[in-house]
Structure formats: C-alpha cells, structure tokens
Image: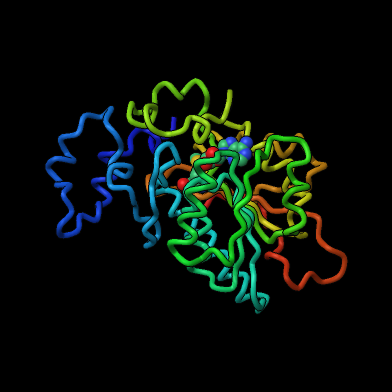
Length: 288
Ligand SMILES: C[S@@+](CC[C@H](N)C(=O)[O-])C[C@H]1O[C@@H](n2cnc3c(N)ncnc32)[C@H](O)[C@@H]1O
C-alpha cells in the first residue's frame, strides 16, 4: 500500500496549517486529536495546494503533497513543449476525477492560456470544484462536468469540448485489499470511491487509458499518479492493448523515491508535421 494514504491529519500538521491570528484552532489542540477524529483539513475548512487556498468539505478527497509533484511535472512538460514548438495559447487539459479541483485549478492558475475540462462522478466533488473555481476566479476557463468514466460512451460527453492536449488524473488507485489498512480518519471521512481502485487498483486507470485515444490530440499525453506497483501493471496492460496506440514513456519517482507518476503518450502521429504535438516518443525511462 502506498504510504501516502496512511494518514491525513498529522501529515497535514507537518505540512503547515495556516493558523492565522484570531483562528480559534490551536496547534496543541490539533496535535492532541485522536486518529479517528476528523482530518484537520476538514476542521479548518480549507487547505493549501500549490499556493491556492481550497475549500475542503467531507467526504471530498483531501489533496495530498505528492499530487503537487504531479502538477509540477505537468507544468515542466508544458513549459518545455511550449519552448520547443513556440506554441501560442493552450493547452486544453482534461482532468479525470477532479475532487476539490486541486489539480485543475492549480494548472489553470499557473498556465494563464490554458483551459480545463474537469470531470468527476461524485456530486459533492462537482459542487466543491465549482465553488473553488469561483473562489479563485478561475471559473471562466474551466468546465466542470459530472461524469462517470466507467460508463459506456462517457467519452462522447467530453468530445464536444475536445480533443485535448493532455489528460491528467490522480485516480482512485488503492488496491481493494489495502483499503482496510488505511488510517481510520481516512476511512471515516473520505469517500471510498475516491480511493478504491478495485482488485489491482486498475479499475479507473484502465478506463482512462481506454478512452484516451478518442479524446487526445495526436501525440497527446496522459499524466497519472499511481501506486508504486502500477508502472509495471500499466506497462503490461498497455502491451496487451496495442490498439490504443499508447506508450508508457516515463516513470517518475516521488519525494520518497517511489515510482509514483506516469507519462503515457499517444503514439500515432498525425500525417504531416504536427506543429502542436508533444515531443516525439522516447524509450520508457525511470526519472528521478
Ligand atoms: C484520489 S481522488 C483525486 C481528487 C483530486 N484530483 C485530487 O488529487 O485531490 C479521485 C477522484 O476520482 C473520482 N472518481 C472515482 N471514480 C470515478 C469515475 N468512475 N468517474 C469519474 N470520477 C471518478 C472520485 O470521486 C474522486 O474525486
């Protein structure tokens, strides 16, 4: 099981809660909380992600520190690509499973030309993502759509807004058998639908990969946060689906050195020179 899912409260205190003057919540009181008690992010009602203050409401998933690394990687790649092709505007990004909107809104705030389509099957997540988009005045560049990506033809609901340059997701990826090992406050307060990825944590990942070729521009990219066991599983899964024309090009490690982030690229190039394409395929590599 990925260690990152083990706790929210104490980890959050280490990360640094913004206890403002006049805030009635004291650090010592927060430290004394029993593990089963409400995560501090829900108690405070807001949480920092990539410098943005996001409203937090249970049971919507609390954004984790490693997901900030995923965002940073996407930003690096977008910046690099813009430099290579001198692209103006864009990119158009699809986020699957937006939760509170943490990934989408932080990308929008750092990429002033970008637009995002954010989908989630949870009603509470859709409401909160909308509220956070308005709080941050980013609502004009994001379309938040209630959608279950496991439903047949789900891609058809997104296609009118696409095709997209990249897909990003921190999907539910916990192996079902690992769910009971999660910290009590996670199990008590966060939506299990945000966490449980099925038998091998691949249920939603495989649906994202299966619908990606219909939604991605040629040479478009997918960035995923996953469990350390997934790079191998996803690699094998993609080999069994050559019809998708998707290649695992880079595996990146998190701050603890665990292989946690995947860059998958669509490999069927457009005829002619795709001026807006992502850099050409490279052999799969594990980055630090
Ligand atoms: C791990 S949370 C990530 C939330 C947010 N992106 C973040 O990183 O803080 C996964 C999200 O996927 C959503 N989700 C789960 N199954 C889904 C499905 N079949 N279709 C769309 N969204 C789904 C959950 O509701 C949850 O908000």
